[in-house]
Image (cartoon, rainbow over all chains, first blue to last red; front, side, top):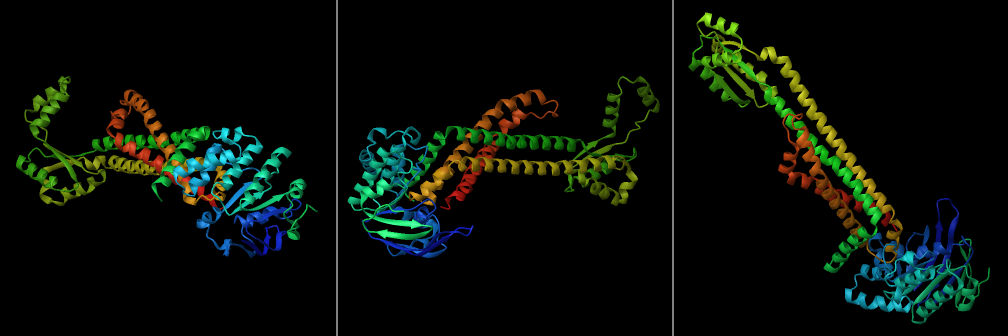
Length: 226
Length: 304
């Protein structure tokens, strides 16, 4: 489903953020990417979301080299991916409901579809009673659940979560991971990057360990080893 | 693009304009002040052209005829002048009328009137007052008269030659004022546009992360951009309307108090008579600048 082919990314200051990364991810996998800060996890995610272009190599998503897509049609590709970030990245002047609905509106879905799907997803992430709250009125865990709601509303093929629990306490971390696990069990591929050893070990799924821009371990039923 | 998407873009723009209250308010405020500059420029150029027209109107050339010149001869000259394309009006003053006007002017001056009586005969010649369409054209009109030798016999003098320096100076002053006026208007209009661009860029700068998120969530460039453009247009529209409302009492006050000082120009009357032009200029510049500035400001942050 996803294939990184000898991907290298060098920033202007010269130090490579990624060097010669080759790796494949199959449909319905749950993959954790671990490593120290600066190991290249986020850069890898950015390559996958086409936020940045690799200096060398290609990234394929279902046979398409995503970095050959023109900027003007990138949104079609991105609608296949649900994204969750450490800092939530909700739209501050939209309510929880509107933040989730935005992803559907932008994709051109019909009004009645939006009216039926958004409340369902809000209930799924346990925020049915906070639909009209703005992000500033929600706790970190709640904001992250809105973000997950937004990520899954268009039933994407892939969920990418960059440090989704980085800003959360253990209880919220547990809840978020449970939601991601459930999404994966329903058949969606999930890729997360994390620092959290507990999260990775509890999962018992594939773990990719990165160091200095290189993949140093790739374990089928891995643990957090650094 | 279908109707639903259009509705969402316009609705989204209006909603975000209202919700980003303080930023929208600041934008409208700055745009209003800027559009007021544009409005004052309109007033200024109106006052300027009125004043210049009034001055131009005072400039004319008088052709004085010798007392022996017959009326048909003078009327012939008048008709010749009237056919010239440069000439706006020719006014004929007969000898009798000149005398009557002279008496009128000197009703209190018995000595002069007595002297006039002594003379017995009317010493005044008939005259033609010529008004050109443009003050720069007097020279060619006078040249036309001098070209005909038969005129030389009947024309006593043409006051153009005495007034030449004054007329020339006035003409060049009018030209210079018009030129300077145009440059000032252009400079201020440019400054206004720049201020509006900078303000909207700043307003959209606060939303740059939001734009990046919208890109990542899969919104097309058009779908992200349109609400910002709509919000920019709303800001421009509100500012233009505010400016028009604020100008009403200002124009009234200036019209009341400064009309005499401005040589009879009433700003309030001008405002009411030219309301449609002022309305279209202000609303047009507000809406176009707001929309275009938003369009360009968003572009910068779409590169995600």
